[in-house]
Image (cartoon, rainbow, N blue to C red; front, side, top):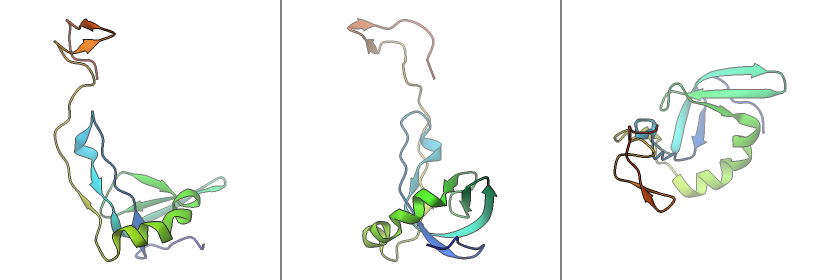
Length: 103
């Protein structure tokens, strides 16, 4: 599949994070904002998820599957709260953790 150009529409997957929910995104159609070639890889940034770069050589192989999954649905940010991995009172290795949050 050819490298996309700025302004092209591509599909991106959904991403949901436990400890940094502010980076969550609903997958779907997205508009290419930037294309950067570094060595043998092409990095794609989209308007709907700024600051995240996708490796086109990997993502291009998923375009048909993502198209079937999302159809005409547009990608969008869907942030929620950021939470630490381990907090006071969590059970870790069978013991209750007492200490500062671990991010």
